[in-house]
Each structure stands twice: as C-alpha cells, then as structure tokens.
View 1 (cartoon, rainbow, N blue to C red):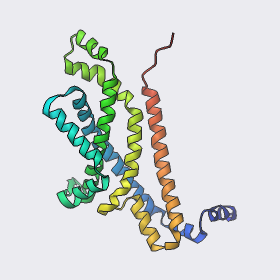
View 2 (cartoon, one colour):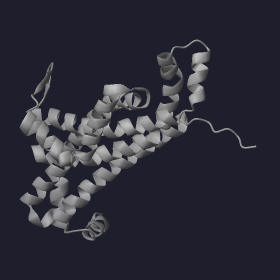
View 3 (cartoon, rainbow, N blue to C red):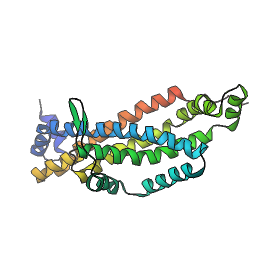
Length: 242
C-alpha cells in the first residue's frame, strides 16, 4: 500500500530521512505556531503604530511630523536583525506577565522589533492611501458640518483602509517571512527548529528544508487567499465608464 508513496517521497530525498522528518513533525509544527503568533502580534502592533504615523505624515505639521518621518526613515533603513539584537541585547526588553501566561524577553523583543519595523512600512501604506482619497471628500464632510478630525475619521479613513488591503497583504507576507530572523535572539520559531533537526541528522538537510518550505507556503497561501477575499469584499466599486 505504501510503496507508491515511498517511491514519490524518494524523488525528493532519502526515505529514511523523510521518516526522521515526519517523526519530528510535531516539533516543526510547534515552531510554526510560534511563527504565526509572532506574525499576528507584530502586524497588529505595526497597525496600531503605523496607521496614526501615516495620518500624521498626511495631516500633521511641525516637529511631530518631522519626528515621525525621521523615525520611519531610521527603522526602514536599519536591517531587521540589527533592530532585534538592539531590542534584546542592548535595551533588554523584560519579560511580560499576562496573568497565567508570560512572554519571555526574547518573544517580547521579537514582537517589538518586527512590529516597529512593520509600523514604519505600514505608515507608508496608510500615508499613500490616505493621500489618495480626493480632497473633495474631505471638503464634502466639512460642508455638512463635520469638524476636520470628524471628516477625516468618518469619510477619509474608511476609504483609505479599504484601499490599503493590497499593500497590507504584501506587508503581512513580508513579516511572516521576517520571523525567521528571530533566530538571532534565540527564539525557536519554524526555521530555527528546522536548523536544530538537520544539525541532529546532517543527511536530512534537504528534507527538512522542503518540509518547512511547504509549511511557509501553506501559511502564505492561506493568508493571501483570505486577504484577497477581504479585498474583494471591501473593494470600492468603480464607476462605470461612459
């Protein structure tokens, strides 16, 4: 019964090495859970920080706008591994206790590093989508008695968020892949656990890499398809051409 499957597996590596990988699949899937958790937390932090930053760049002025722009340039221009190392080894982000659960300093550093880096890029996504909404929309809101803040909040922001989904989708994928860099601060995410396995069995390097690549592909594919559907659902209808 298993001979056809064994033959298929043999095309992409040694059969015994594949058996070794499957025996340790739960270990790798545990790393995938860490990867997903880091990605979601970092993206959310990036949104919470990045959206206001993008709004400041569009509607702000003076020292605050220059500060936001300057910090964004620094974060986007600094390699993510440097940001993570500074967070963990230089700043020394402490452990965070959440009732019965706790986040180690490494996890907290990873979330902060990835999240702030993502915020720097998300700010540009939201800056461009906020700026893409026609000024007439803002003026129309003011004309019906809304304050400038209310017009931005109730008229411009909903349109900008809908337009930001394609860029946000790309950023989500980038952060998902960037989680592999947290090996630099000792976090055992998916790629780090894969490295542990092929150090243990050096003949299984190809098989381990293929397996973790498949996991990354599934995570990326599912995320992209979900965001595609979200984008289609909330897309701003185009006016019919004359």
